[in-house]
Amino acid sequence: MKSSIVKDKSYAFALRTITLARWLKAQKEFEIAGQILRSGTAIGSNVEEALAGISRADFIAKMSIASKEARETHYWLRLLRDSNIVANTRITPLENENLELIRVLTAIVKTSQATSVNSKLRIKN
Image 1: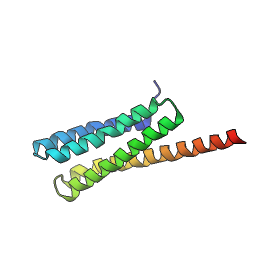
Image 2: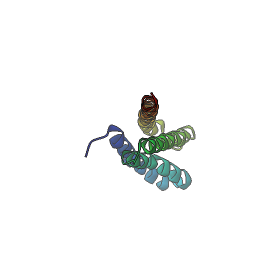
Image 3: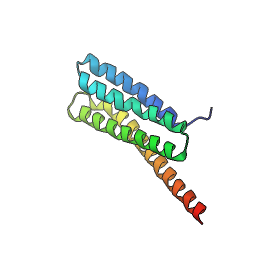
Image 4: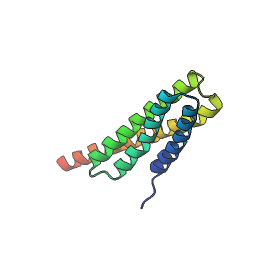
């Protein structure tokens, strides 16, 4: 199977998100633990679905959802940081990793959309 950087990065991020959620549950922060767990692991699951997409449109839709999940995760990470539930030293590496995923996913979606539009234009001509 062909390797994918975004697939590998989103999987590694999901593993770290699980670790964070376990720690939050131990701190009795159940609600936010559930939120960060769902959004943080949904990034990778949507990337996996996109890579198995049946069409370019399906690929773009799933990658767009992965991007949205990454942005939601960024929201929860910021809340954890700004509410002082998690120390900056612990949350900053996750935030940086999350922002990298957002940039990669945004680039994939934009490039895929542009390529899709360009191929439609060529067909019409």
